[in-house]
Length: 156
Image 1 (tube, rainbow, N blue to C red):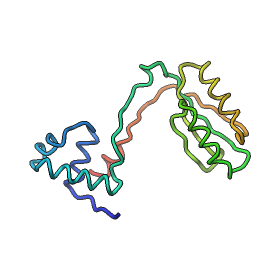
Image 2 (cartoon, rainbow, N blue to C red):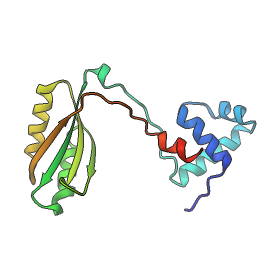
Image 3 (tube, helix red, strand yellow):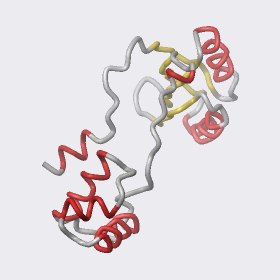
């Protein structure tokens, strides 16, 4: 489905980017349109695949998972990528995984309680069949993590 986003859609998206829990009635009031209009537009944006649900942002640091590391995984064969991705998905502390081109086959992010816990996770990942080796990079600080920056730039 090819959906053309107009100015009304952009404005709705900007409100939802700022606060996914903003009621449609509040958005409608700010835009001087009916709540039904907002509901219909959001439904169309969902059907077009532009909106794919809403997200709850949790603070893992406050939950005791302050240690973040990025791992590059080199596999024995590239045709085993999906198998390794499936195995990584079974480890809840692997929060992001990308299939990449370059030095590694897979690049992933892990969250752990501390270095000892991270070491256990890395050893667990090393044990996955077809993982030849891993290389770890410890995150010292997250400078920014704003998934909406690009969307805001597109709509300017």
